[in-house]
Length: 493
Image (cartoon, rainbow, N blue to C red; front, top):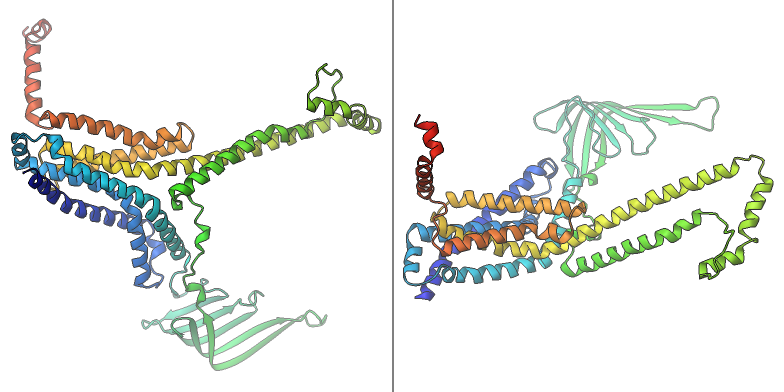
């Protein structure tokens, strides 16, 4: 009987889980398209490029989609069982709520393990491939689009203007072409009464076939003092200008340029990066004092009886180096305020050195916190799946509502709560207002406690979300107030 109940619960779980996961991934893909719409489209890159981009970003959204899918599907599963009194029948057979949650508990643990593997192995790879491809698409020039009456300058080395462009997008009227390929200014200009525009060799070259025009070339002659400028002009009935469209091709950036980002590092790589950053940070702090001593010039009139190594070095140089430098400076100083000016200069140097070190320490510290935070998120994103199960399963048994009504509202509320707490925790950790461990684990900790609360209520068959319970409680409170002397004094008179 128990195995049949487990199959019943698992069969009710998988369909909404897969469907919810697909819907959430689709929503985040739409968010990507809306955010980068101007950068993604209008570049004639081919359908396969966009399919590849959407595939990578579908993988990137899985760690965000898994907790929401787990929460909503468990809410719908146990809510539907409660709505049709199947959960009541299970409890009447002597099976507790925790035992009814056991198959889903195992599934949640397995999905959490998968989520950790995915965050550690697949996600860095998808981030690297996806964001590299997104960068390549964003930096690719838009498709050639010459408009009437406006100089078109997106084609490197040329500036093109047409007075009229016919509906076939090939026939042009009154064409002006400035040739800047030699980087010598506007010394080569071509005017034509009409033209045909088309591409050849699989859109690798753009051809302007010009008719009835003039070609002007201004050639500077630096060797002659009499005539420093020659202007060559000739008429033509037909001419061709060939332009390369290589600038509109998508160029693949080397992946090495992106591998240093935290989101593209694995668990072990982040740990090594964190140790290196912490070591560099501590080394920078330790060297600060030693390096700052070079900005000070002083002498010691009295030496202690017991000398350390640094004091012994100073004693050996006394009356030979430091004193002699000061005496030489005093003897050759014509301006009595020169020593003061020198001290002010040294002080400014020290201040500049301190400011640079503070900036370097802040940068190192921020990089260390970001790396450490990303390392913790390898665990927190996986644990969030189990935490959402711990909220969804007992809460579904309490509300006893299936379908896409109340469960969707509750799931969105808790997902937004998780997202906001995660973002605020990350921000506080990056700004060093809290330690990284608190910032990374605050969301899971709070939601885990909420899940335990709902689990205790579900075990006791709580009617937490039933309105009649609160109506009865309100009526009882009202009756108690009616019996008090203050109520009689205020309202019976």
